[in-house]
Image (cartoon, rainbow, N blue to C red; front, side):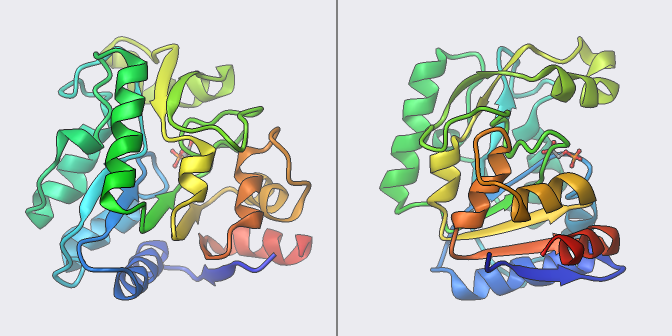
Length: 237
Ligand code: PGA
């Protein structure tokens, strides 16, 4: 597969460089997906320290727990607002955020329509779960899936318990951009510190048991990997 591998000790700086390069190649005011979780934290720190080179963009929500308020401490778009958008002075538009209290079908339709009207996703930054999920597309998601309500895998709920437990626990369900929606992004940047699953996803069988394996079919993927992940990828190649 033809992805570009970026690796080195300073993960945040490398990720920021990759994101800046993606901005240079994208149209003006691009539509950009940003993930939450531990992996992107070093990138967001570098963005706060160094900015993004004055770039304006439209933020698109990747996923959100179902049934919670935007202001809930577990809320993913709230986390991105605090960590990235507010420091850069970039606003949120409700059309591009899952309202997790509204009827799920309505919200998914709203998001898909907003993406289409805006001309499609320019840059989709992703993390990867230990089970191979991207967004909240858990194993056995269909490659043709669009945004929808999903039931979270037990392993995902366990992985996210540490943060969610003090705030009412990990919800059972979530809203997520679908694999097809993600796949249609012009540029994908995968941030990863997980050697085994990343090697499996990028060099193993392409199938829905490992949702991230869909990335093997995408024409423009940059993988920002820790040195351990890069070693595993080179071994698997
Ligand atoms: P993490 O999560 O960055 O917290 O490891 C990634 C994911 O589950 O998508």
